[in-house]
Image (tube, rainbow, N blue to C red):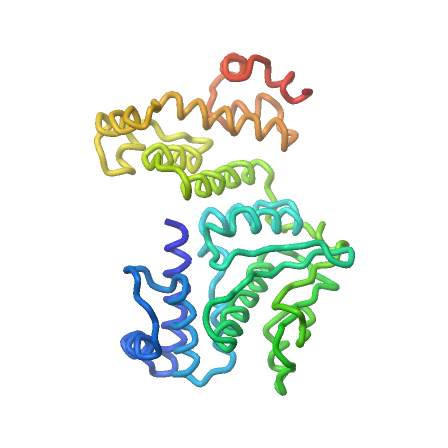
Length: 330
């Protein structure tokens, strides 16, 4: 899963920083357990475990900047589909909307926001651990957010302000070097303030047609958190990922390590067929393209793997009871 990739990448980078200080993974895990880290399952660097691992690493290295350094080591590629969706956003405002809707898939705790003083406040509520542990997690989170932002936007976000709840440190100059925004201390909570005038800052890799696909992949991952239809979810995910050159059922079955017959049987158990899922995905993407892009009907037909535009129009009428042009006008 994408979440596991992010966890794995963060943990790998943490071990890399520790290795430079001569500290082994065994030392980190043993000391974390001594410090009281609970072990509820076989996942590493998730939930309260992340708090203990990071605070123990800071203790072993005696590095006050460990959270900030770690945040800079994890790039947007670690977020897989979510990272690609961020890269395809039109602007900062759209990026924030994406973060707030799909952040629960990748971030614990979740990001929250509110309108404030003509702009936007972005924060997450962290209640686990001691104040010192919460500070480390906050620094990691905002350092990571800053690193991702630097890869997305061409210009500096003038007027943005990073606010931390704890008192101003004596080494504020060194602290400021980790961020490309103003940093203040003694705030109400750990948060980022974004003034209204920078929310339309364009993303340098914006791509509307790609964004439709990645957005729907994120929507599928969000839906998979609550649905019990595991095979249906996986087939839908693979179809979305292969948009433009859709996988057929035999290739889908191969990706899922099962025979085509077994896949059809499992889908039937979940009261759906492969053809119905394929039509659902193409219809979903078609309506998104029609409402969110200026692509021609012929371009959309091509993106949905139709060799003839007329065949796409017929399918769309069957799905929606109107032509693509009528749907767009409506």
